[in-house]
Image 1 (cartoon, rainbow, N blue to C red):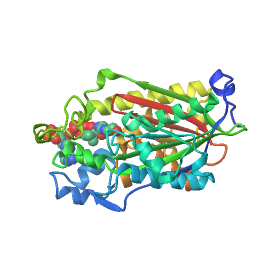
Image 2 (cartoon, rainbow, N blue to C red):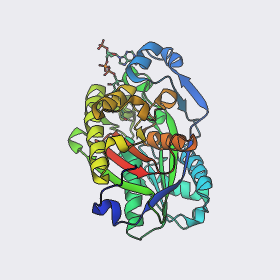
Image 3 (cartoon, rainbow, N blue to C red):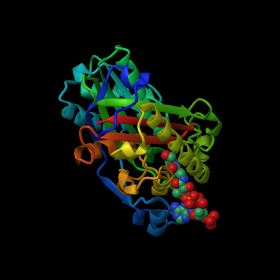
Length: 339
Ligand code: UT7
């Protein structure tokens, strides 16, 4: 018999928020581990065994974050069978906006013709998609809006240092989207836990391009406009933060990990996912993994995985799914959804 979520205020008293459509997009160009081995001192063997990544997609020079976000959004809109004019709010989670301002969400609005929407970007690095889902949920449950377009999109290859083998082998480009809407019935977002710890803001960051280190010749010579990362420390914090977020989201939902049909995690490193599976005491087969094909696409990663799991039938109506992410900030989030 299917377990019912507990009667916590979060799970029963709030207006039901459902995901009524998903979409995703990845660029055509593929960069394999073998290709990378001709660019820096690395090998397919090292990248595969340390990360699980085999290849990643690279956006074209003139293909911006908003272009990928738009393609994903249009797929989600089509599946949701809504008109762009019905969208009240567009949230784009990204660490690589087209420009510092205006918001990338405004570019998406223009491209899809969502003329009735308010638009803003969400800055929570790789965890941004679930932060945006929580913001959308708050707007819908408070009766402010009915229909929200949530997008996770990143062009990390535009801020990658292609001479740094510690980072350049990890990242790829893409976008994923979901339409959230109030809908009667029991399906929907049951619980979300989001969190941050600014004490670790110096282990994964891009120092340049903002007001602290503006774009100057000297700063560009120092590669400040690229990702800086302490990989080992990020790895450690990621396992701890994702485990804690998963447990808190499950507890708020009144569910056990064994009630979950599919876990959709941030796609950064297969070893991180294996460590979480091990500590949660569930088999790796319960996790949806696509990082071998796309690498780490930051805010897009969990959104692309959700769309693939949805369209391939890996998740079915009535399934409980757990999404769990972490990113620079540090930021982390866990969300339980009845599909
Ligand atoms: O969305 C969040 C984004 N970031 C992450 O998720 C990163 C989390 N961290 C990780 O995934 C892992 O720490 C890495 C994959 C980045 C690195 O794996 P590791 O097992 O922690 O390796 P390491 O940093 O301890 O490096 C081991 C060795 C070093 O050589 P020495 O000092 O032992 O001689 C590195 O220089 O591997 C070397 N190395 C490489 N060798 C070949 C580092 N990168 C490479 C490479 N190819 N690409």
